Image (cartoon, rainbow, N blue to C red; front, side, top):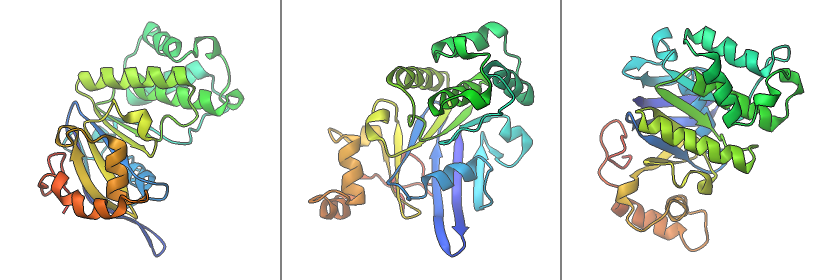
Length: 259
C-alpha cells in the first residue's frame, strides 16, 4: 500500500505540490494524471525520497524514509541514469545485490529477453540509447520484486513492443498484489491499466476517481472535464466534477473525491 498525506513541496516561492494526499491499496494501479507542470514528477520524486518535502508518505505502513520501506519499492524515472562503466547485465546484478534480493541468473536473463535486451547485456551504460536505458531501468525495478512500484512517464521513449511488454508486466505484478503508481499525461497508454486516477493540476489534486464510478465515461473525457483544458468542457468540468466523484475519505483514498 502507498499512502501520501499532506505532501507539500516548494521550489523557491513556487508551490509545486500543495498538500497532496491519496492512497493506492495493495493490488491496485493508481494513475497520477495531469498536464505538463502539474506537479506530478515532484510528487513521484518526493515519494521516492529524491526531494525534501513536508508531509507524510508511507510504504506498506512504514515511513518512506526508513531503510525497510525503501527496500519495498522501486522507482522508474522519466529520465533514466546509467553507470557508464557498467554493462546492462551488471546494472541488474548491482541493483539486486544493493537490495539484498536473491535473483537467479535465469530470472535476470528472462527479464532481459522480455525487453529485447538479451543481446545487449554486455553493452556499457554509456553506449545505450534513451530507449534502451529506459528498458534497463524498468528491468532493474522489476528484478527486485518490489511491493510498490513508482513510474514517472514510463512509456516515453519506448518502442511499441516494449510498451506492450511493460503493460503485461505491470498487470502481472498487480495481480500478484503489487501496488503501482504511474505518473503520466499519455492517456491512451494507461487506459487498460488503472484502478483509480488522481487528476492533478497546479500542484493540487482536483479529484480522485475509481474506475467503477465512471460508468461509460472514459479516462480522456474525465481528464478534459476536470481540468477544463478542452473547448466546451471547462464549464462541465466545474459543475460535473462533484457529481461524479464519490465522497472522499480523509486521506484522499480511491473511494473518494478530494475535498
